[in-house]
Length: 181
Image 1 (cartoon, rainbow, N blue to C red):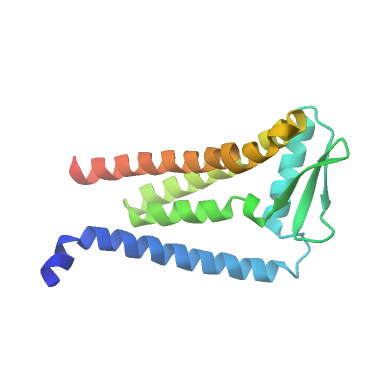
Image 2 (image 1 turned 180 degrees about the vertical axis):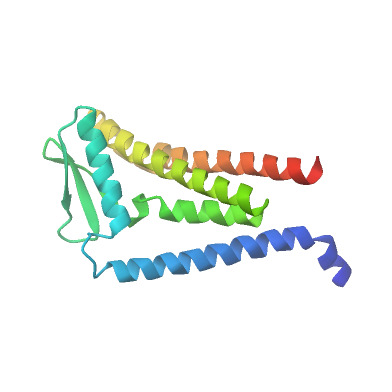
């Protein structure tokens, strides 16, 4: 048994680091969300800011957009020409995706400076891609409402998860190059 554990030590280390990081960060984020319920920003600060930034970008490119708090759920309604285009909910703020990204990167720890820089730049990239994803989704739904379901459930989730997957591939290539080259 000990020999078997030794043989798979790096795999076990990856799994335990990934799961441990994911669980800890998810618990911290859940605590943030619980605490955010009683704060000034609705539904929570990060989701509120994402909605504001999407609203700003839509207006900057020529759409008549505005955001309003949803009356019955923790969401911001994103409107174009007084027409509801999207509800920006907590799941739209990219934090859960960033937690997943951090967990993977930390499981392939590659030195403090390199890992920290990659986590910061990757998180910023994910956040920006997410804003662009929401804005493009709203534009596409506004222009082609018949494709709403397809765009929302397939194309735009694939964009953010595809970006994260590319970041992971790049990180593994760096890790492999450092440890095996």
